[in-house]
Amino acid sequence: DVKVTQSSRYLVKRTGEKVFLECVQDMDHENMFWYRQDPGLGLRLIYFSYDVKMKEKGDIPEGYSVSREKKERFSLILESASTNQTSMYLCASRETGYEKLFFGSGTQLSVL
Amino acid sequence: DQQVKQNSPSLSVQEGRISILNCDYTNSMFDYFLWYKKYPAEGPTFLISISSIKDKNEDGRFTVFLNKSAKHLSLHIVPSQPGDSAVYFCAAVDRGSTLGRLYFGRGTQLTVWP
Image (cartoon, each protein chain N blue to C red):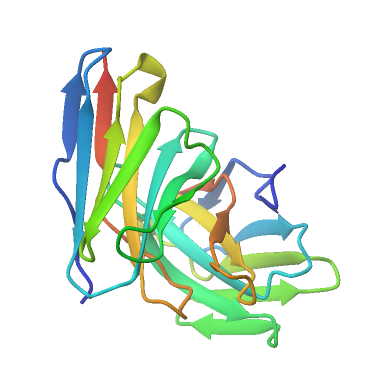
C-alpha cells in the first residue's frame, strides 16, 4: 500500500513565524502535490511537483513556497505565517501516467 | 472559475436508502473522473473512478454514472450506511494535458442517519 506521511497532525504557530510542513511518500512517485482544505471551499491546489527540483504553482500559491530536493520528500513552506493560513493541509502523491492521487492524513495548522 | 462543481453542500439520507451525489463540469477536455471520500481529520481516500469512454462503473455499493453530453456525473450509494457519513469530493482530469492535474469540486457532506 502507498504510504504518504505528513510530519505533524496538528500544529500551532504564531503570526510571522516561518513554518515547514513535511511530506514523505514511499512509493517512488514522481508527482507530489500540496492542497489546503477549508470548509465550503473544497481542496485547493497550492503547489505541485512533477519531478525532483521541479515545481509548478497551483491555484493559490501566494504566501507559500515549496522544496523538492529528493524524490520522496515534498516540503511546503509558509515564509511568514498569517491567520488566514489557518487550514487543513493535505499532501498527495501520484505515479506519472496515472490519475489517482494518494493523500496523507493531513496537518491541521492553526496560526494565532 | 470553477471547472468542477458540486452544487449541493450537504445531503441527508436515511440508513438503507439510496444516496445520490451530483457533480457537474465545464471543461469538455476532461476525460477521467474520480470520487474521493473524506472523514474529519483524515486525508481523502479514493472511492471510485470512471473513464469518459464508459457511462457507468460499479464497485460494490458504489456506482458512478457519467453523462458526457450533459457534462454531469453522479455517485450512487446503495444501501447507505452510517459509516458512509463523510465529505465526498468529485474530481476531473484532462489526461491529454501536460501535467494532468486534478480539478476538485467543493465537496458534499453526506450524513446517513439511522
